[in-house]
Structure formats: structure tokens, C-alpha cells
Image 1: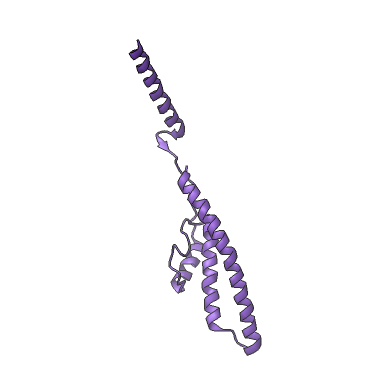
Image 2 (image 1 turned 90 degrees about the vertical axis):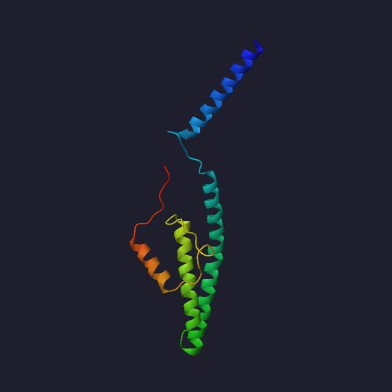
Length: 135
């Protein structure tokens, strides 16, 4: 009788385990997105902080550019190019933070934002490449 009770207990445990699995998985497909969600939360917070600092740097360079304009009457081309790249970087961060794309910005992409990157960003503005919601 003890052996029969053990077998019944084991069968009940197996049934409970299978019930838990089916309740977590709908139609045999498990939606275990936990690690992806926590990764997205981590990178969102990280890029939010990086973006906050980057906007301050961007604004500081704008003020320096005004200084060059007032003193020399011309804009500094090096600062102009730098702020252009920083602006594209901020744009990429905003696209990631607003769930427009899953592609992470620098340092997960190449830094030198050149004309090809600018053309790609402009074409993305016209496309409807939004993040797909998982079902």
C-alpha cells in the first residue's frame, strides 16, 4: 500500500507540474520574456542617463559656438561637425527610448555618424519601422 501511495503522490506531482506549465504557456507557446524585459528596462535607464548628460554637452557646445560667432563672426566647423554627430546620437537614443527601434545606439553601434548614417536616419523617418509588440 505504501508503494501505491508513493505512486499516486508522484503522479499527482507530475500532474501539478504539467498544470503549472500549461497555465504559464498558452497553446504550447511559452511567453518567457522576463530576461528581455529586464534587459530593455536596464538599457532604457542607462540610455536615459547618458542622454541627459549628452544634452548638457550638446547645449554647452552650442554656447561655445555662439562665443565663436560673436568673437570671430564665423562658426567653428569642427564644433559644427561635432554637434551634428552628437545630435544624430541623441536622435538614435530617442528612437530606442521611445520604442521606435530595438537597435541600441552607440556603443552598440559604430560611433562615426557620417552622411550614410544621416541618410539612414532620414529614411527611417519616412518608413514605418516600429517595434512589434509580442503576442
